[in-house]
Length: 588
Ligand code: ARG
Image (cartoon, rainbow, N blue to C red; front, side, top):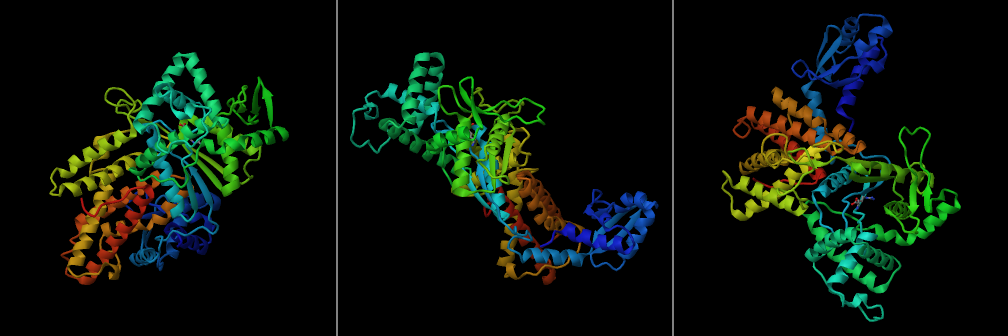
């Protein structure tokens, strides 16, 4: 379906043309003075210079051409030359009917769908997820869903940190605790045990201890590097032990991401491209892109227009070891080969700014991607505590994501039980759902690049710009619809009618923005636009609801019209929260 504002603009453009003016002056926007009008056009102001005429004269002539418009019911030319507009009820109602009959509520599907890969999550094997991981997971999941909803193919990849020194450290830590494990016996030729020799909680103790020790003890670090080398060169026992580390860790990660409704299509990692590195390096050397500088292999990526220093992209260290860059570049190569995506999107902390600049430039320069492959890096800000510093536990430590989720669930459970008569089991389930909405909405409603303050009180409130408020609104609509059905009504058969009051019309106008909003959220990879939209929509609905006695209305047609409007509002709200990555309970 065409976007409503485009249709209004077309109508206005014809009026400018009919009055003898350049039609491009007829752009219509949503009114920034809703007390005066619904939409506005400032084209007469812009045209004044061009036509050497007072803007109000142009505005009057254009208004005159719109006297019999079926689109604009009220057109006022006001000094100095604005056109204040109201849309007709009939035009708006037809538009809303069209939305209701469309599977995507009026959002057109792309002529040529894109294939997009979203690299998000940022998890590292053997390290627990902490609060720093929430943003990548939550924003990335939503962007993936937005693309899908908008008709594109989106593939999510967690791109695990599962290679390099961190793995050597874990292996060394395991060896210290259990030196007799068969994995360390290089003469062993039999089959390795199926059971991992550690649990996830042991793993999570091993890594930080080993990492701390390697910083103090150079000999220990040398052992860890040796273990890394053995792992990477394929020593059987090391590979088998590493596989256990990976499996135990991934099982735990899946559980944690799962509790946030975050799902990846691919659980690939840095290790997956290990074998591609030699060929990539060879290619970069042969084509003359890479050269040796101070012993390391690098590719220059600076550009003439740079205002800051962009150092070369390092491909191999002087000891021949690969780096974070190397695996990322090899992953780009692999993704292009296996999936041929049109677009690659990465989500990381905004401190990786320069890093991604280098990697993208290097990928382009060395032609690992095609000329029109889009590379998009989305750097997000920090989740802070109320003190404005990165969020910490009460005793100043790094908060595990798991604990953040459970604390939010508990807080929500307490609030749900307050003043509600609900069986304990149901209250728990509802609290879990609402808690996820609180966390995710609290994050997604901020523009990704900005820092935000995690405020559990505010996020879990049923009032204001919060996830629970949105869910509460959805549940309220569901309950009215359920009562209508109890009264014998049929929601699917209810026919929309023209608005009878301002709050109803305002709700319709807000609904009509859906396709334009979703398109913008996709084009700009911006979930916060969806949050802003549903907050306004929920407000518009609640305003209407407080002014209208729906279920006791005696005029059945009128009642049915409202029910149809409610059903559409519910559908759009639920579609939006699904795209944001959470869902609403039946009651709360
Ligand atoms: N594991 C990385 C980290 O902890 C984040 C990975 C982001 N994705 C990427 N392709 N580099 O910083």
